[in-house]
Structure formats: structure tokens, C-alpha cells
Length: 264
Image 1: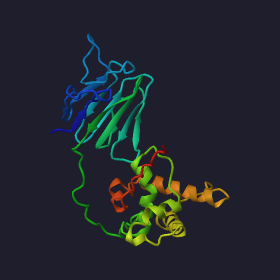
Image 2: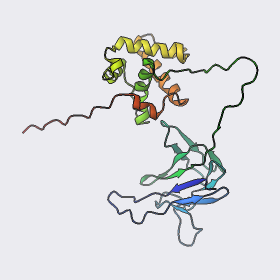
Image 3: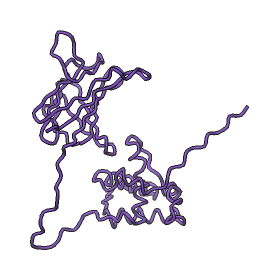
Image 4: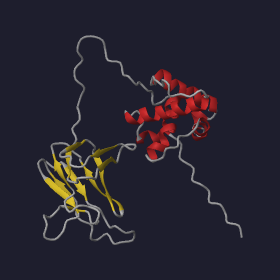
């Protein structure tokens, strides 16, 4: 059974030919593969990362049944494993850590290098999922802690609020109520959406649906309070997968910026 597929890094400079790209590395349960710079006369590595800032043997991958493990052989450098399907989700493998389990299906392993960073991709297509829910037992039914209606207008507001972070996890700027109203107005159901209505939906999400505990994080002014609510909503929605990339299809197409004519 094939567990993971490793895609080594391609050409390091833009415009380089892709004919010498290393082939995909297929690994099954129990297989191991070292990665690093590699050098003649030293132990060969399966995944070559050609940067002088990368150790000869920087680490190791080990395929398990439906996931994989990463070992970091560095004494002072941490490695990052990014979830290529998540909104900025990642885990850090500390120096010297052996056999750290990686739960992501599509991952990018990033190592700091002299050229900025070097990365390679790991695909784990054999993840196992529950075919059907377990039979109901006696007693009261379980109540979903975050029961959201994906057809409701408040959910559109939440998706629009999360959109920048979903498209670019490094984007720290969240849209304001006016921005969200303008983003959603092309939809037939949101033609009359106002800034005040968006703020109402944000309050409804924060206090009724997701039950945020803002505590002492809010300031005395309303702008500070609204900013904290928006940030906490986005954090919780992305952390628990309440809003995902497929939900972006609910939003209207984004307008392309019109190029401005240069003056003679």
C-alpha cells in the first residue's frame, strides 16, 4: 500500500528548464527517506535540497499507515510543515525532534536556507475516515456546538470576513463592515445589505452562534471592540474548519482591478 508521495524541489531559478526535475518518491508503510544537501562521500539522501545552508543530512521522513513522521536532525534549526489545504495552519518540528507525526494530507516542508528557504511537498492520499457514524446510544442527543446554516446571510458575512485569510494566510488585514457589505452586494440576496446590517450579523455570530467570550480584550471605544470581535470570529472559524476554501464559491466573483492609463 502506497502511503505518501514526495515531490522534491524543482529548479531554483526562474526560467530554468524543468527537464531535470527529480522524479516523485513513492513510499509505503515503514519506508524511510533522508533529506538534506547531500555530499559526495557521505551517506546519500533521497531528497536533495541543494543549498549550502542545509545540512548534509537534515532530517528524515518515515511513512506510516495513513500518515507520516518527520525527524529533524538539526541541533539549532526548526523546520516548518505547512498544511497546503489549511488557512495558514502549520506545525513546527523542533531541533532534534524525532518521529513527529504529521496529520496533513497535503504538506509543504520548509527549511530555512541561505537563499531564503527551501521546501518540498509531501502528499498523503491514504488518510482513513469514518464510513458511517456510530450507532446512537441511549440518552439525550448531542447538540452541535457550532451549528451554522451555510444558506443564511450571516454565514455569507462570515465567509466574506474570512476571505482574505483564506486566500492569503499571511494577510493580517480584516475587512470592515463597509467592505463586507460592498463585497456581498452583487448577490441577489444582499442587494440591500448595509454596514449596520453587517455589524448586526457579526454580533449575532459572536454572541448567539459562536458564543465568543471577549472578556477584557475589548477596549472602551466601539472600534476596538468591533475589531476584536472580527479577529476572534475569523480565528475560531478557521481553526475549527467552520469556514473552508470551498465556501469561497458562495461569494460573488472578485472584480479585477482596472489598469490606469499612464499620462503622456
